[in-house]
Image (cartoon, rainbow, N blue to C red; front, side, top):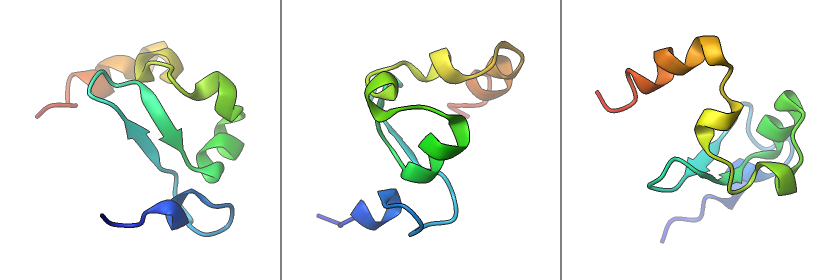
Length: 67
């Protein structure tokens, strides 16, 4: 198994990382994502991705998510 923990530690990666399950629910998020978006891990985990995308961007994501 590949160790990806370094992607989720503060200051270890410049980008943001989300891991989703098959139902597009968030199972893990990087510290950088949490900081930039103002979420707490407990409130974010197990949330549907559709719950955190602003309405005007939902069609941009979901119309292209599986292409």
